Image (cartoon, rainbow over all chains, first blue to last red; front, side, top):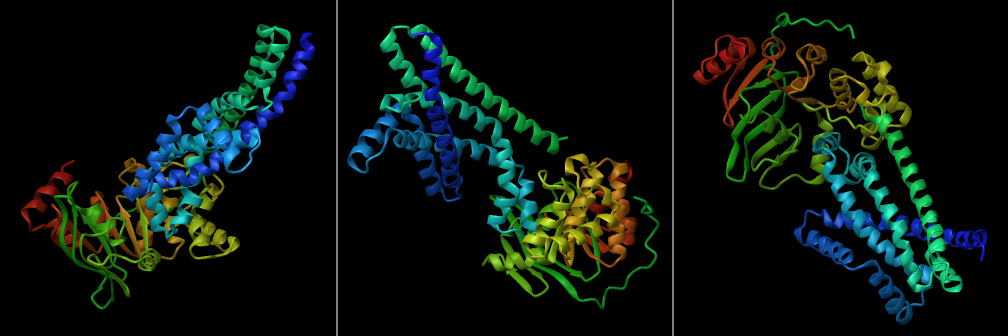
Length: 215
Length: 267
């Protein structure tokens, strides 16, 4: 099999890898908001509950999560496609990690911002919506984007439950052709290009915001 | 900004005795754990009065201010602003807090402008979201206030593009935009170098001359003497001396006050 065919076949996996990364990241970024709220709750019980959820999710390896969602839930509760199972598993892990990133960012916003919101009469919802959330987003951006790059690479484990992503195709091609070195090298180039693109975009966005806001 | 920066003694000694009381503290105390930072403060503020709160660091001046608008809920006592009365033993309801914030404006030492919004948006935000003014109405009012403090040209900039003195004048505008009855200033010039601080003091002086009721925690002794009607000296969580500004500043009675004033005067 010539390398052009290999590259073409690997490229067929790219949309799956990208879709998996985007879907898990977006779902996780949204799920992380209530989780962060729970973790940051003033009520100690709620806060412990949040901390426990985050600890459990983060202590279990991603592949175990994926197997758990796909084989346990996907075959006994509701039928899930490998892709859906992978998105569910990865977005739960993403949510736990981003919740901690949000929490750190929330702590990094100076207390004066909340105080100023109070004295001008904003409600709690308005305080978060207009004052805190935009600043948390900005502070979270660098950590969240490096997490996203990590997530991109973690999506490769979805091949273990049969998502036809770059990793799965590379594995199949290797078994057919025994040209593992070249094939995995090209797969690596694919992952590298995507990571590089993501890093570039996030840095561009970050410096744009920084240019406008910071001194 | 061309506002005149002068500190000649206030032209007229205001007679405020017939004015109505707009703020009243009865036995307000604040404890943080075992430490008592405010010891049963009684206090009255009349409409149009400008009160300077002075005293050494840690004497409770800022805490007193923050107890008034419940940024630090008092642990005992009653805060009454207009027809609103908040008893520390009961606590403030959400509606009471909202009412309190409508009546009180506050300016912080560190400005606390919102860094992700333009200067105009900083001033318009609460007008639109709390007072439900339309965008046009809010922005018009914001521009009017910015013009007054000489910063109309900064409206579209982010706060970080403005100097400290400018940021503080913007913060004052943000508070004034909500038409407060009383303005609380918590060391408004302490984070500024002395020259820049004068721009801010000039704005505050104008405000005082227009009849705004003000409470100012400050280390600016000239401002205390010349702009305020009354000076309150605090130490260790208590009011140890108060009275007409010139009198307290020139011939203090309490030895602790004499010591404090001579220390700050000798600099």
